[in-house]
Amino acid sequence: MESPVCTETFPIDGCVKSTSKKSKTSRSVESDIESLYKAVPQLAKTFRIIDKIGEGTFSSVYLGEARMRDGSRDMFALKHLIPISHPTRIAAELQCLTVVGGRENVMGVEYCFRKEDHVVIVMPYMEHQAIIDVIGLLSFEEVRLYIYHLLKALRHIHQFGVIHRDIKPNNFLYNRKAKTFALVDFGLAQGTADTQIKLLKDLLGIRKAQRPVFSERNLNSCTSAASTTKQANKTESVRPGDLSNRRFPSARGGPASVRTQKPQRTAQQTFTCSCFQTDRVCNVCLARKQQVAPRAGTPGFRAPEVLTKCPNQGTAIDVWSAGVILLSLLSGRYPFFKASDDMIALAQIMTIRGSRETGRAAKAFGKAVLCSRELPRLDLRELCETLRGRRPLPDDEVPPVTDCKDTDIDGTGKTPAPLPKGQDPTPGEKPWSGLHDERGWDRVPDEAYDLLDRLLDLNPNSRITAALALQHPLFKGL
Ligand code: ADP
Ligand code: MG
Ligand code: ZN
Image (tube, rainbow, N blue to C red; front, side, top):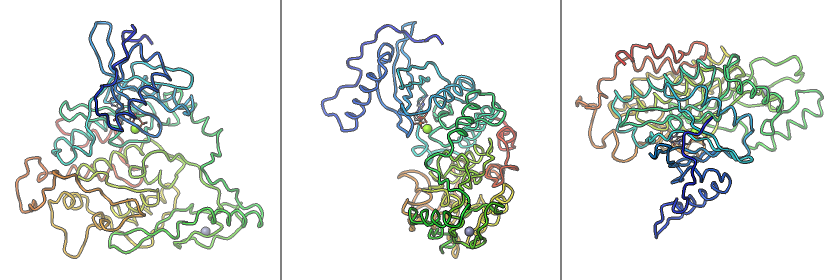
């Protein structure tokens, strides 16, 4: 690939804005930038690195300015991957960007630098806003457009057999003024069985070869009584808070506990489980071999089949995440689900989609989900309008999500997060009194909730695809 940027030496001194009073953060950004120049010295020939714009578990992203061949200056996003990433993983991320990216709302790539184990992916810089800063300002029309463009990106990558696995607003850049969108971050992407991205296929092979990984409890199935009991006890002692002790606030405020299990025992397992259809986990089950299934992503955006570790996961998992984003945008709450672990995330899904419905769907993909109390499926319009403050709270019925307000779920915080100051719904006003809403929140068509219902289909086999969702009546005229 030939560099589109001018490779003359670029003066790097003065690359960081010098101000007399530097905050601690700006000093640490400066030192990060210096370290990056040291790790990948060729960057200095091309870029003036201005700022750090993102920091995740697997990378840091910087804003860089380059002088182009024609003398103009352009801005780029420089993604510095953590040096411990697997080479095939890095190459696969790059291949997704080069083969799939650059069109249909998917970020492309311009160039890539490497020195030893340091890799920097250079992408066009796209100015964008964090969803938390704009969610309370968006009109219904803007939400409709946002979801349309997200689904367009998903249709495109799914056509190539790419499962993104980490669909969330932070990975879908949104420029509200310019109405531009870009899906980024293929760092967790995986291929479908027939993927066109060769390196994603290779990645499947690597994952298989690497099993078992250290983070998985890979206890052998019951081969001898002594070893099983020992292993089961060991497991219990290292995991003091087993699932049976976890309690979740439920729709009506009382505790409900949730867990999943494989519904059928294998012939190999000779010991009798004593916990089936109860809300405890017995020693035999604790000693079961962990089912290996990919589980990347962010708990609040994970599909039920991901949360329950269903081994056959497809592009439908991205569609679920898009549904969670739509739920967030329609209700004006971000993040909508905030869960510290998968069982809490599943419990939160059940408070919205119903416990019986979740159990039924799980059965369809080979999992049993138990919930100690029945949680009714909620009407999505009622839920979103209530959370937006456009509907009074029913007297005797506290909506499930706000119910969590005073209950610190597992010590992690509230679900969903309240809106930042100055954003809708306006305090003191009674918006449900029939006031006209200039952002269109008084006229949300049924189609919006119908699409939401289809994106948040608990069963991945019947969940709408991105391609079909784009033909939904909600998008008429786009
Ligand atoms: P990570 O794997 O660390 O999450 P991402 O690729 O998601 O890395 O990038 C992290 C953040 O950096 C994004 O959420 C976004 O704010 C910013 N970013 C990434 N790529 C670009 C880009 N091309 N233009 C502008 N900002 C970007
Ligand atoms: Mg990211
Ligand atoms: Zn059991």
